[in-house]
Image (cartoon, rainbow, N blue to C red; front, side, top):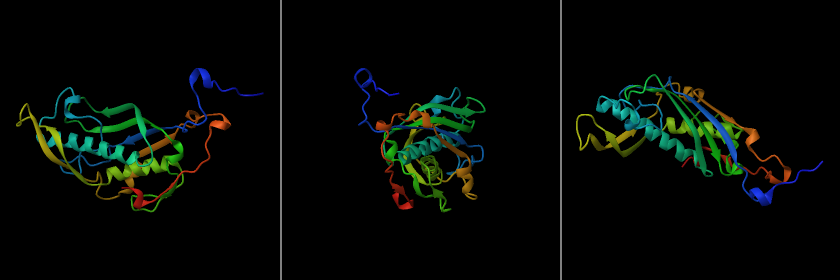
Length: 217
């Protein structure tokens, strides 16, 4: 038997990079949600996304910190190659802005699978070995949740600002101060192997680069 590839009709080319698809699930209930730089968890949502906006500036800053961490995560995930995020599902107890996120799920499609590292060590400080691409992605997400960054952001302020909007410097710190390994425990990354090309001449030789803590920037 033989496989004939439909290159003409569908413009499929063996020269195209091999994509990769991963599912990502974050259980965020164990992360801090105090009104401090460590609260806010991680979420793509901003204040205007909620049916009821945050009722105080402190609660609104939690939302902004979650969005900042989501941005940090995306930057980390783009370390090796371009990617797209699909099918984001956010889980909240309610659609009120004062309600913390409890779960974040999404699909992650990488443009070039062979550039996503599959060997190295964890950047979280526990020297966990990385031997799959899914573990590399998990480590990059955990790094965003364990880092500190300050950025000026447009923040909803229910008591001040023009149109209740202010430009404020927002600092997002680690979502856990002790038991940092629990950050990793709340993240599940799974590669959808059937998404990859399934004919021999479309499969590239595996030359993924190794990864270590000094590659994180």
